[in-house]
Length: 496
Image (cartoon, rainbow, N blue to C red; front, side, top):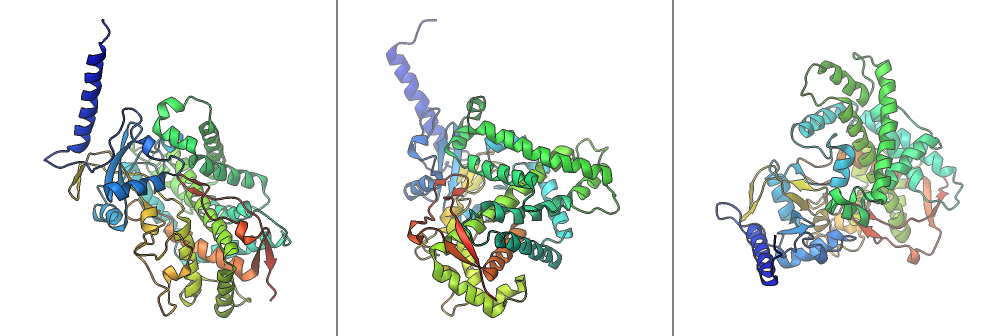
């Protein structure tokens, strides 16, 4: 075959770009795709964004193209929702249509579509419904779960006391508490804070969240079929996932040998019982692959998000000692030193409640949200979104809305207080997302954050190791998670 002449080649390139432009602009029935920057072949719009700070780049593009716009990250079309109205209209107003899970190749390849967080359709519906039911039966949102968290908080206080007011990175000590809560739900098992296997699990979880938020993971998600076979941090990620799965499989095997279906003790027992009931159903979603993947989901989300929130709360309080002092005063007034904090105290502790909310707003832990997808061709406002298109509902654009939160870039508990000092709720407070894909463990996480943090501050004063001006609360990397610097502090026991 003769080679194309240069003029013919140029005409072909122009025709291709025109095709892409028309395809992006026109939908069906006269509707248009959302506007957006013109993409280049293969790489799309990645030259117009910073992969190491994608949420900020997406917010800046919204200033030009509006609250609903489209772009291509690599070869894949993305719809971005920016601002409270757009996010709420989609995730609540059209919850079913926007209830799919968007592409997240590094997790899709790790779990192969099993579990809750990254699954679709009937698998997701069945496993989510079952898991919510079992979590409620095991006490989530009830006094029994609160008692368990309070007990774990005392283990946490004991571990912090053993640091003897010496400088310490709090990451792994803090992680032990929420990880033990998840372990008790899954396996009815409690680990000592010095247990090597337990600490190894926490290290794997922590490292994987760092990897999945890295620049390398962003590249993997753009071209997984190519990068998957190259050396890089993603290979460590997959190895860590398998080690976590092995940890879970070992305990599942133990449960299979001791299961009493009439007396299930934990989530694993309940799942194994359901597996036995549906063993003759070839379409059942209750199988060992889903059990292990759900365990992975619960350990990952239930440990790292609470740990990061607590760790960053301590960092923020080191930067704002006047806030810590006011929280101490409120704890002493409402709770005192002779009993442990409880959830009913929160109504009488508006400033502390405001601090907890402001920490979650300010740290903006998952800025881009987990990717959603439309499950069918969808009309949204005046636009057309094709079935299967990935959607980014930017949580950062809601949590940092300047109309709702005065000077959102600044940490200020007054964002959640009215003029009388009473706690003020806000519809813009959605760190756990909203709609059908909102975090199923939100109630548990909020209870843990409040009880663990207030118990720490009831018992300790925080002392920085360096001058507070040297501490930075700015993200080092803004990927899947907002990753902040590591730091050390001293936990000084408060005299009773």
